[in-house]
Image (cartoon, rainbow, N blue to C red):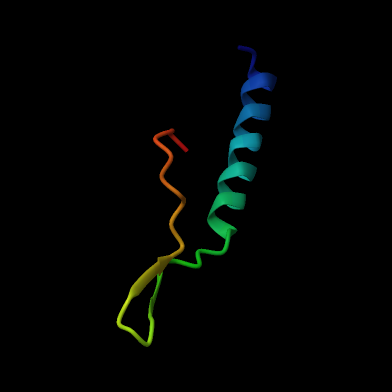
Length: 51
């Protein structure tokens, strides 16, 4: 890998890192219904596949 290719890859990774850090992290939310049921929001649906 040439010096210019390494510089381009470094810049691409820096931009990707900045984008990932700036994403809104809504986090997890719990909601309790009137009947006492508990719902958890903010997690990806588990389908057995890697995300």
